[in-house]
Image (cartoon, rainbow, N blue to C red; front, side, top):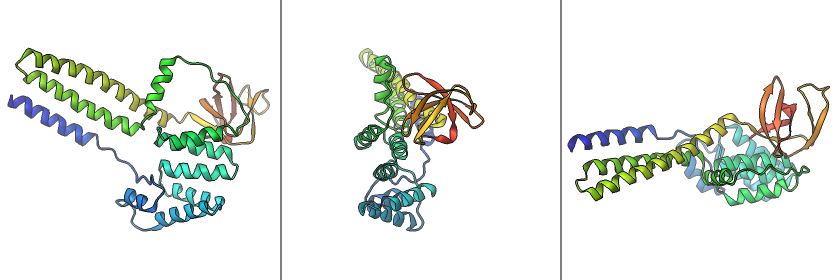
Length: 277
């Protein structure tokens, strides 16, 4: 029995040490006090905090251009959070720059997928785009699984998978150390359930990581873009897309990107005319 306990303790210690995420400071709050709390361990001066205060003040005073400039300066300095992207998206929307607004709303959702305010503002901004594309219907299970995955960020799913792994190891230990048949059954079925949950949470975390690394989703940033039949300026036009429309990049060739829209249509456009999420 001592041998089992020692092995489990060593395994849990290794999992805990391995699972600690390393991230930059996350300024996720509007209030200055909350920002200070989030970034206290990393900020060595008051410059980021002052920039945040000035940007919020400019936004409140309807000076949206100044707010945009200050928010962008924070991003350039490496301070990234869903609240920062959300506020920047709001400022762009007030300036009637729909493409930049939608881009930053999507970036905010990447960090905080379940936020209803971001989702609502994104829907409002998308209603101001010119393209009305009907998406291809997909299997309901796929849509259902995606909606579940978007309830939390990739980091949250990673942490949850570690918790499930610990519970699974606990169930294994319970199964090995129990003498009565009924408790051994509880440990066995508990292990099976935790294993299935571990597969689910790990797949969600991996899918989010692949999506982040691939950076295949993009937003059209020009007022109107002609989608070509091939990566050539003289190629024939297939259709026109407008600012704010979301596309998927399926291929790249020099400074050209092959894109796919929600209804399945494909074509080529210059990569400089879109921005990846």
